[in-house]
Image 1 (cartoon, one colour):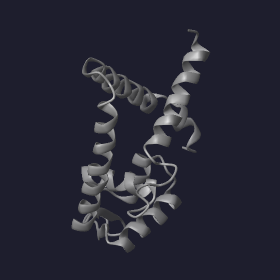
Image 2 (cartoon, helix red, strand yellow):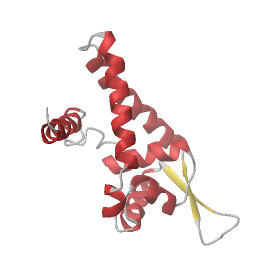
Image 3 (cartoon, helix red, strand yellow):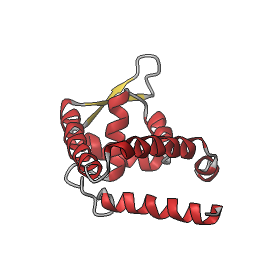
Image 4 (cartoon, rainbow, N blue to C red):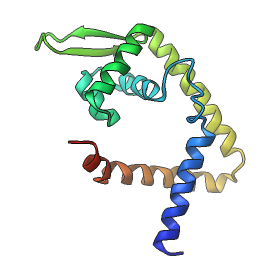
Length: 150
């Protein structure tokens, strides 16, 4: 298989993953947009400023501002003024936000578990490792950095 064929297979597989995980039909729409669900995940990792969240999500500040406003209005996120810089706000996940994250994770884990049941156990590690390597390579590549306007 040549490089072009390999790239086409990876691209099609990536599209299929997005499709079958329900991102196109916004299966978590009752919670929020796909971007909002990703923000909930990131804010569960740590509290951060809107600027930090923008960098984590690879989204511009204006988009993140609208995204955060929606999360605050839904009661999933609260903002607190930073003590060291009173002009800056910290975003924190609320109890309701953590409940929604639990729901997202429950559904998403179920999807992955159901898919893995279709795969022999000896190949499951191959999937896990391959996706981790691919994800890391995408993160480290300069493509998104070169196209995000920074």
